[in-house]
Length: 464
Image (cartoon, rainbow, N blue to C red; front, side, top):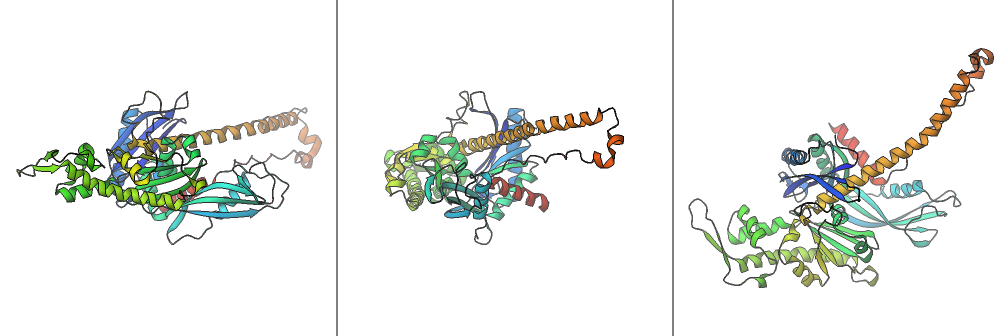
């Protein structure tokens, strides 16, 4: 069993499955205790298409992480991605009975629950309901309505929607791997938490996470998530193009891309050639690096164009929605040479590569502080945050219960010590007038995502 201050992130990707174990050190930084990485079998473009193979890959990754850290893993925080994810903007309001009373968590929960009643396409369900800004009695641009008075509470929401069957399949894979599902997070949000600073989120930034099967986009402005999208193209389509264009096998194509690939053909000279071993005694194949870069360039431009279209759909051209901090690229695809320059050329926006090292402890291995592991680090951070909240809630409940218990003990003691004649002198009716035990204090209100997650866990339990 892992301790309260240790969390496990499980990144189920198209090309790799990563299990990462981490904890917070005394400086508030994340210390990585163990990592397991295996080839992902049974996942296509972020969606599980073979349950058995996915379970085997998850178990291998977990076993590696356990061996590296010496910690037994029981529960994980999992990332959700895939081409089925889409997002929309929605406004809603509630009318409060007493406009003199201050707005509390319960009112915000009621408003979020109302959004959950939106009618989606068949087979779709709302994953995240993310409030952007609130209005109280017409007063707009309110970021924190709690404690204010008002009759009408209104909000703009960023709603993330996905295919419920795909999400349940991920849940089943985790459960059948012998693990408990501690939480689910949208992968672009996890990556954003690990590579973006608060200043960038305030100024306006687009995070592009280029994975094996999909490219995830998350746009932030004024510290709030404004737009998310999943594009069904990633590093695998570039590998596929190299394989077809150069008539070589997939393993060789992937090695070529990683070692010699570039997104900018002008960087290679005509006479630069790499020799690939032939199959089963055949002659080696010579490939021009300039031609290789051209193949990569065309596909990379297509991916960037689709991402840029999403950024324009958000409204980047409007002055109020300008993304001052530009673009941050992360994920395994971010390691492609000269990709940063190509993104700047296509979009005209400032670009940097996102490394998850800002939130990691100083002694962390350089390999882990790579864009490749940005999502896994973000999932560990999310898991640690959930555990910290659960611990705070437990402590709050214990504090509230202690005075009650002390008062009950005092009352019981006083009754028992009246010369042992309490029952005889007052009779049965009198004895029943002992004050009733106060009600147990209510658990602090939970957000809508947690309630949705509980429903998913119930479904998976009943499906067995």
